[in-house]
Image (cartoon, rainbow, N blue to C red; front, side, top):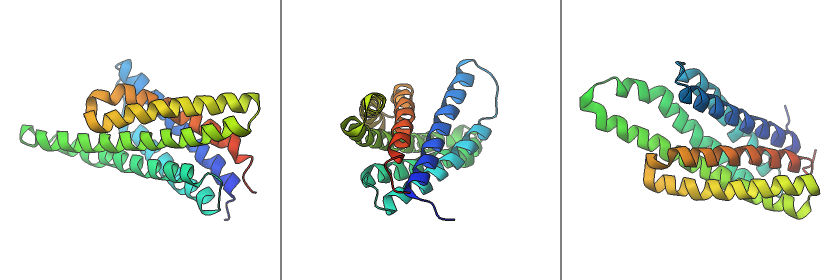
Length: 198
């Protein structure tokens, strides 16, 4: 099946929104101290990030005017697939292995969250690029979405850069900034998809 740049952009935007929803559900359940199986949410996220990685490559390969943004989205999706995979495959066994392996667990956790921060950093970068373009070419609603994408993207860029340096201390603020940036990135990508060929 052939995918046009426009269709692939819409699909990538949809799965970006899926990851926003799963993040909100996960944080909401954790905040309410409700018992739940995190592997279900993480598996949905893994599939969503795989789809983001694949479908973001299509507009990039088809000569989109926004190749750097789509490259950032594809890499951000790939980094997030790896960090979710680490959570699914490694967190449980290593955390249950006892006190002797506690430093190993902490290292794995830190590595996973570095990738989490890096992925959100890249989504923020893509949001800035697409947002600025929407501000230039769009009408009232498009300019507003573009401004929000650029501003939240800048916030995600800054906080997740600090997260890559400071580690877990930044996880809540960087995660919140990254989630907001992902939402407006998806909206900007959806609006700009109308300008893609096909």
